[in-house]
Amino acid sequence: MTIYFIRHGETDLNRQNIVQGSGMDTDLNPLGHAQAKAFFDAYSAVDFDLVVTSRLRRTHQTVQHFIEKNIPWHQTEDINEISWGTHEGFAPSPEQHRDFQNLMADWKAGNFDAALPEGESARQLGERVARFITWLRTRPENRILVATHGRTMRAIITQLKGCSLTDMDGVAHVNTGCYVAHFKDDKVVFERENDVQHLETAELWPTP
Image 1 (cartoon, rainbow, N blue to C red):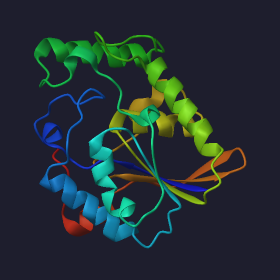
Image 2: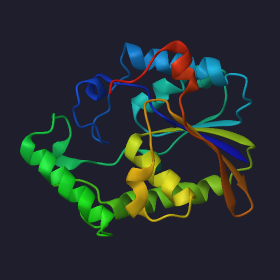
Image 3: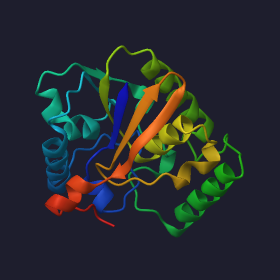
Image 4: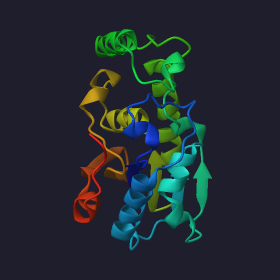
């Protein structure tokens, strides 16, 4: 089995540096749609047997061209973006930035129960991601395309590599960056990591 993991395309909240978690069901902006089309053009020849997305529109729109090919499509909340609680929908204030940095330090230290107010902890994210990976391993398909979100992507890749969630921030991602992983027995081998050749070709780089 080969799995292609892609982060969604750019949204206006990405461009405006506004916190966007599971509670923000936003649409792709024009650049995001162009990134999605560039990804489709680069990977349309891959014979995907299944498309999997989160329940949030930005992932649906990112792989819409594949869905329109009548490839079976499955949605799951297990790969929704993490909830950032009361931080969502706002550009980070100095106080919010401090809270976020403290949260990252807690997770790096192994305190996975730490969370922003009304938000989700790393442990909660890790549990649903682990459930998703277990589900993936039961699938009969040969090639699966998975569209998800930045922090969730970090948790997925970290767990597939057998690493601790303390290492999440070492997983790079940009809008429509692609990881390609081969599942064989109990082993996972990565062929590509955060591949962005389709963006380079079309000059569609995300906002820094």
